[in-house]
Amino acid sequence: MFVRTTAINKMLRMTARKKVIQGGTSAGKTFGIIPILIDKAIKSERLKITVVAETLPAVKEGALDIFKSVMFDTGRWIESNWNASSLTYTFSNGTRMQFKSFDSVGKAKSSGKRDILFLNEANHIPFEIADALMIRSKETWIDFNPDNEFWVHKETLKEPNSEFLLLTYKDNEACPIETIEDLEYKKEKAKTSEYWSNWCRVYI
Image (cartoon, rainbow, N blue to C red):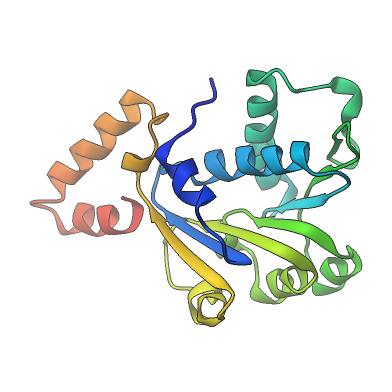
């Protein structure tokens, strides 16, 4: 069931052209961005929204799966609007939301311009591909799990048109109680374990 979370409310307050969301495990990053994009798609005619992940399996099992769940849960899914071959959903007002991956800069450039870009788990997407997509997008959303410093820290966040938001599982009221129990237990183990201390620093 779809839940409007604190994470969603925080993301809705972001105003920069490039919105960078860093979040640990179960922080509700993608579960928040996808509903925001659906809302934009419904309210604005003939937008082109592109959701990108590292590989097609990654986009299908991640952002696309969440998209379908939210659309079904909110009673918005229309089967005839879905093109399974191109992984594109066309809303009644002509707005298209497409789910893609790119394995070369050339393919990213040839994909054309768009209104909104979402780079899902961007730390797995090469900078050259991400940059080719961002420069052709009016608005960009970026989310990632903070494994290591990467191009978003070295390049994107140094630009004046970017904004940063840090989320944790405490911002996600839809987080399953079982997940919260596991995360809280890991925080306890972190008090006496360097391994779990480092794990919590990265993922929580």
